[in-house]
Length: 385
Image (cartoon, rainbow, N blue to C red):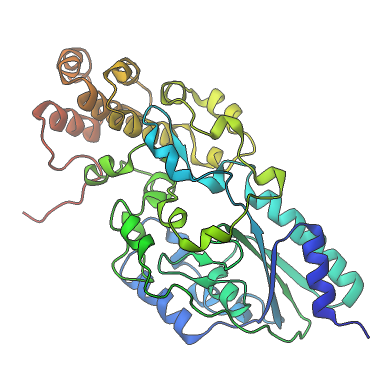
C-alpha cells in the first residue's frame, strides 16, 4: 500500500508548493500562552481580529472539531535582489517583498484547493483549507510540522528558504503521522532585532506590533505617530528589514512561481508619481495586488511620509499639491512632508489652507509644523497632564 504522506508530499510539490509538513491538529501550551501575553499587553494595536475568537485561534480542534491532521504548506516568495538596497533610493518607494507580486492569498489558496480536491479523491476524508483568512496560528503549526521555526523576529525561518515562505494549511480528518518538529537554529544571532528601525522587539521572540513599520503602514488606519515617521524612510508598504538580514537567507532562492515574482512597476516606483494617484488610478495600478486592500488614502499617507524623508526639496511641490486633498489623512501628511522639505513654502501655504481647515488633527499638524517642533502631533501617544 502506498504511503499517504509521501504521496501527499509529492503532489504538494507538484502543484507548486516548496515545503510540506504534517502536524497533529493541536497547539502547544507555550503557543497559547504566547498569544495570551501578546494580546494581554495590547501589542496587537488596532488588529482587533487577533483578539476575537482566541479560543479557536489557540486550538485547531475548536476551530474544526473533526480535524485530526494539519498539512502545512510553504510557498517560496524569495526576491531576486536584497530589498534593503531599495532603501538607498530615497526618491522611490519601497514595497515589502511579499506584496510586489500578485496577492498571495489568491495564489496560495488556488493551489491549496487543488491539493485538497486531489487528497479527497485519492485518500478520502474531509478537508478545510486556510491561508491567512481564519484564526489559525500558522507559524507554531509550521514549526510543529517541521517546515521551519519561529525566529527571534517572530516570523517563520526555513533552513532551505530563509525568511521567505508564505504559509497555507490543509486541515484533514485523516490520521497522518506527524513529522518531527523543527528545532530553533537562531543560536546567538540577533541581527533581526538590531535591524528594526523602530525597536519593535521588546525581547527576542516578542513583537510589539504597535511599533512595527508593517503594522503602521498597513494595519494602522489613522495618523502615523510623529515619533516613527523618520524611521519609516521610504517604506511605503510594509518592512522587510528583520527578514532581509537573516543569515539563513543565504540558502534562499528566487520565487519559482511567476505570480509571486515582483512586478517591474513595484520595484522602486517614483514617489512623485505615487503621491498623485487618485482613487481610480490607485485601484487600476494595484489591481490584483495586496496593496489595493490598503485603499488610496492610507497609501498616499505612507507615500507622503516617504516624500518628507526624501531630503529632496524638489518634491515639495508634490506635497503642496495635496494640502487641499479630500482626505484628512492625506492633508495631515502633506503638511508634515512640506514642513520637512520646504519650511518657507509651508509658511506661505498656511495663509491659504490653515484657517479653513476643519479637521482637528490636520490643524494640530499645521501647528506642530509651523512651530518646527518635534512634539505631539496626530497619532502620537497622549501623556497624562
